[in-house]
Length: 170
Image (cartoon, rainbow, N blue to C red):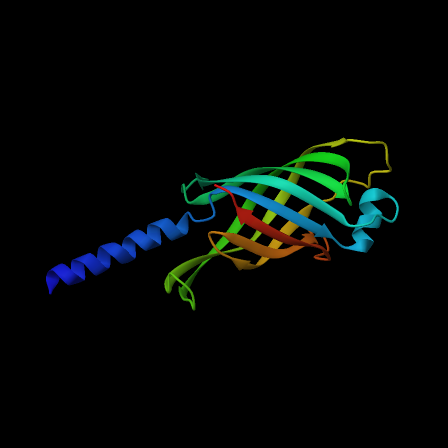
């Protein structure tokens, strides 16, 4: 009986430890910009406005060693035409723990709710009327250790400017 309880407790603790770091790793992300925001980004109407990026997130950041931090490299496209490259810092990641969940792990499940982006550099790949710098937040509706889905919003107004989907690559 004690052996079964000890095994169950260690298994639950092991799942909890792995789950709290589950967003650390490499991700491929696509941001599909809204037509209105594409006008602001490109300075004109742009077909299929989107950004593709490689995201690297690490765990163990901050004063308590329990935070996330990351860097991302994005390319801004209109259709297949590359317009710009950006390096972005991911910060202030809000991860909440749910006591009960409908998916595994069923107890103490971690969910990524939002993060802030800080543009570090941006470079035009071709000549166009690049819009002004903006500060963004990503808000997630669904987050697992394999897929993240949500929306891109302007930090100062909360206006939705795009949809996000990310898949783990490593």
